[in-house]
Length: 193
Image (cartoon, rainbow, N blue to C red; front, side, top):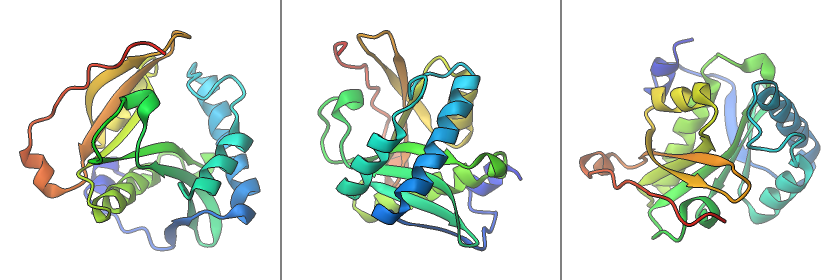
């Protein structure tokens, strides 16, 4: 599957849907997040920690109405968390963006362009809320993931350095077509936390 074609909407994904998660989805989503954490750790990316904290993260995101379930043919295959602010990574910002976190696709579906499809869904979701930017972060020490987001149209606009030494690369892409006409404002980070 060509990720660029998927990003541009040229790939049809019959049977894939995204819906807001509820409490009964927790076990499935925790399993997907745990699997994604192991996958990241095997590649040297500790951004979600060496063992993750999936149960707490999923429960909190469901409670806040931020967690979404990606399904294919009735089976849960992924997660996506949309937040409307992200002060720890982006600092205090005006309400112009949605922040994508916890994007995880079941290992059996890696490389099929579904992650890109979910980012496009997130972009439309954010735009429908009147926000002009879809933002995300990833470990700056994971060059493969950074390249992936760049291939999906995200522009690196800064970094956030945390007190524990973790460096997050900050990315954004326009969620609203009108925003493509706006110059990118680099985010230079906040003081370490």
